Image 1 (spheres, rainbow, N blue to C red):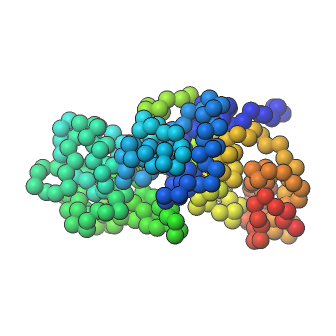
Image 2 (image 1 turned 180 degrees about the horizontal axis):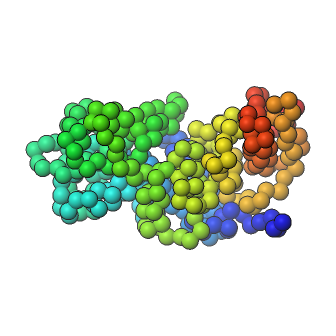
Length: 326
């Protein structure tokens, strides 16, 4: 057996490919301890790439929001699905072409960066349609764009996330509206965002790195995406994934690491902890003591082994992270 890796993750990997919603912030509020954890990672030599499927805002806006939350970030550190989507559009249409936008200003900025002309009405001659999350998008804009898609114009979606995190819980995301356009048009879009490879490829092209670690809170975008491109991943439990969800993850979709939050980056790749977990009569039990990251790691290992052996997820009812489960 190989020796456990005692290096903290922020030293074992050179670039953290960080999701934002549910990882660094939720809505306008920072996740507790996120800024300090990221500052520590940078001090250890790790570079941060802030990568989001949310296409509504420009990198400048995202970086400004991060700085307001105490996270040191510049626009060059931010990579959005809008940028990846614009890149896919640019591969299909000539420079200077008009592209119809179903979405917000983030998409318009990304298209201009690629030498394309974003439009939101039909007075011109759009040759493609790009769609992304935009909370203020008028319904007429959706209707006109959907008609263009049905007429056969190339169609790129920034992402197909069915939900977005909000301070009041999950809300409908870009995927819900993409599904509407798809049903109306009878077509499916080319998708740029996670879990598809284009956004990850865009990230390394812009930010660099040879040993990236994807950090996210969602299985269907962050972890599935990391697996698709062959990168290691860290699932943090500050967003949409619950303990019960964790216990149900099939072997092909499991993250490399699990942690309570971003402070997991300062802990060894192979945790050293005093937690012992077991599944007794189908129910999770945890004994011992240690930090909360060790608790999550022990619980993940144990519930996954139980799932693999029995084909049934363990019950996690009543379990409190970082505590004994009798």
